Image: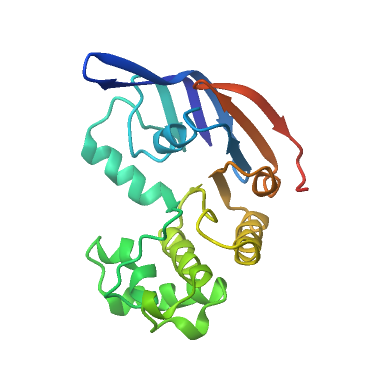
Length: 228
């Protein structure tokens, strides 16, 4: 479903070049739960950004559902990103003036779809993540775990081919983190493809495959097929 072939990413800082990724080749199958680990500066977030179409490689090829994410215009990349990818971030990124239902439905609202049509789907997704009674609450009225639940509902609103999570529990306590991982593993059990960046081996164990990056390349690739 996701194919990465000899991907490189080079950033420039003044006259200096920094190679964030080096010749990464990776295939991610439909329905897989992949954890990406590695020390700071190893290329984890860079790789996730390339998979999600937030950036393009300096060299190599990346495909999602057969569609290239390399060598295309920014508008084409935005369209693929909106329709194929759902994002979950560490800091939730909810708009404080919107309700939980409005935040969850935001990607569709930005497409010009009226809230009257978006609301039923947003409320159904909020119920799916255990927030049926919080649809009219604003972020300031929600706990950290509830805000991340809204963010997960928002990521699912477009029926994405892949769900990308960048340290999704990095801003949560251990108990709330386990609640979020129960949500993610439940989604995976239903067939959702998930790619997650984490520095925590306990978090990575919720996946069915783990790759470890070092110095911009894949140092280890371990598939268990089952969760720890």
